[in-house]
Amino acid sequence: MSDRVSRIRTALEAAFAPVALEIEDQSAQHRGHAGAKDGKGHFRVAIVAAAFRGKSPVQRHRLVYDALAALLATDIHALSIDARADDAA
Image 1 (cartoon, rainbow, N blue to C red):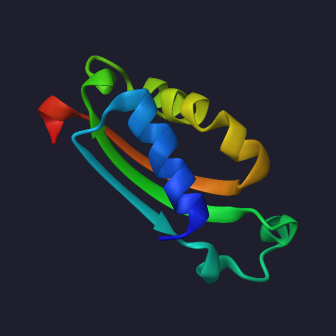
Image 2: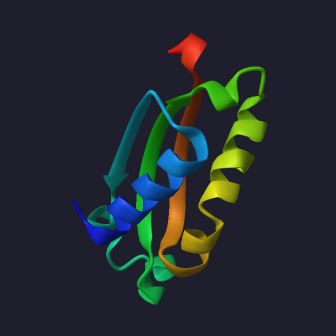
């Protein structure tokens, strides 16, 4: 597991205590992409947590972005999010 994936996992686990969490580093698929030249990566996150109950998809994404704010500034260029409530898994 890459260091960036580990930091993403740590931040999301601390924020949401998810019942399921998958993180995929898709950076290699985006080599040469103009936005990736800054050294930041592309990631896909699938997360299931009670914190998302009663939240719209937009609210769920905002919560994830808030939890990863520091990494978005330093390590993440693009983020694909599938965030679900634990009762909708």
